[in-house]
Length: 443
Image 1 (cartoon, rainbow, N blue to C red):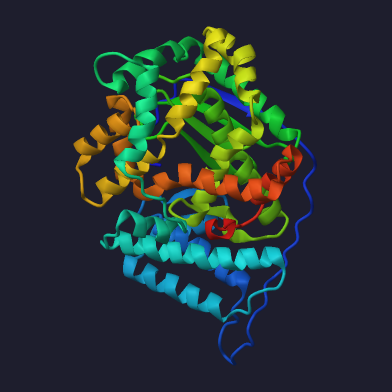
Image 2: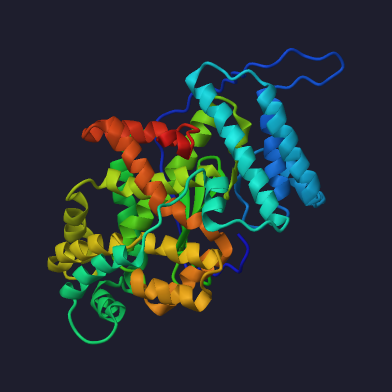
């Protein structure tokens, strides 16, 4: 991601788990060769897909979220900015080549086949956008992320706000009363690193009880400023991540577990580690060495990262842990923990208000100021946080659906298969993290 990095502190977490398996490289079925024509194979298409994504990244600084394939391919992409029209033709040609292959019978190979089909469609859609085509919020999210978020009227959020009005009676805007209440739960800056270290250790300990991670997996945490997001995982390959936490705005106690789980264990870090281990190392599927941010993969990534918080801390486990460990570590009153999370559960029901603000803003129904107003009123975001969120809309547009809709879709998929069993829930969750399943495949 572009932008100046100002790191106040860097912390390295190095951990290890079970041994990795040997690498194999099964191939998909291929059509009969035409004399004189190059043979079309899944491996060839996968390689060309990686090169295509890297080339698109030369036009869009946010596009390539991670790459750990052959360094020479990245160097090659950086030498020349290929015209968008040429890249669009390449995407179309790759889709046509893939359509000529006989769909495989093996389940994982089928998932790979469909994944490449849909990812290529998303590449083509992003290229249309880069060439100036304007899509509505819902058209864009469907084209890029394979899903459309439900729409909610103001009355839906107002019912929730009415309940919070009863919880925080008084004069002035509700967002100000809620913000005043929340100030008692800010992590002091001098305790921030200790609280995050503690939260990360707890999230990892709960994750490795159920999921086997490869040896040497590790990540570094940096505290940064001047970003449109609150946290980011930059996967480096080799089972390593760089996790950045934005300290522009106050960080509340609930963000410790949220970010530790979402960015680390069992969220983005584990997701990328398991994809590299099971799909790249074990199967030789080169397409997973590149991660185009504006693609269906992001809904799975964000959805599992958010739902992973509930998997790691089911039921009352989170409140109990925070009451006993994190609140004291932050110097906060543990007796307030349960009430705080009751309030947060109610506020969480306002999460789709962010989607509505983004939908109206991207569709041109409201401007940036009005979008921030909407977030203040219906999402209870203080003005500075609301304005930061609008900057996120400017940069990432309909990407916002991946957090809440992604979480809901992942939850429904996993809970349907887990049937109430905590151990089965972890098993299904781990298999989802290790496979190329699409959002439409969660239905």
